[in-house]
Length: 310
Image (cartoon, rainbow, N blue to C red):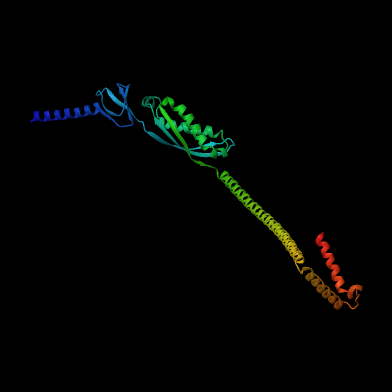
């Protein structure tokens, strides 16, 4: 019975030793990870993702490094600008391990080192920048920090991808001054916009008045042109009608009995006008030839004949 118990214990112990050996011998490396292997305390090799077999009790996994991009929150730090204003700055640092060997043996803690280096670099960059430029040139400041960090972290097997300023805290007095400045700037822009609007409105009104005056003058000009053309046309039509009437009269005179009709018409007009003159005046001067109306008519007829011949 005792022999059976001893055999069971030995078998159980052997099984445990086999399991431990297997665990120390077979290692599976996850994707985007590297295992740094040491053999008898000395660097041996770096294992990439996949299945690997180690020598039990001789090889061991000394460091496990991830190759994924890491985000490190850089604590708030007090920085003094070029114009001697103290500000508090928070940042976010993005890094990636590109060499597991250097990251394991190049520095004790690359995350802490990168964070501290980011703080000191930020203080140096802010010390060369005015307060106003700190807000305006934030992208340039980030690039300067990344350049300095990447250069310093190269021996650690670290690649600095980005650095972003997450927050800038200002003293209360400076914040109040900036708010007043911004308020004054907004009021100035509003005043300029209002004056520009009023100026444009005045220009529009003056342009409208000018155009109205031009339109009225053009209308008056066209009216005068139309009236002048109308009067000219009227005079032309009267002249044409008068000429046509004279031609008709002349033609009628040359026809048989035409001369007698003219003499009769002249006599009638003579008597009619002389009668009007007698009605309108108390004193009447009679021509010596009044008794001889036929002679007067004959004289007028002779005048018409000469005018016709002329």
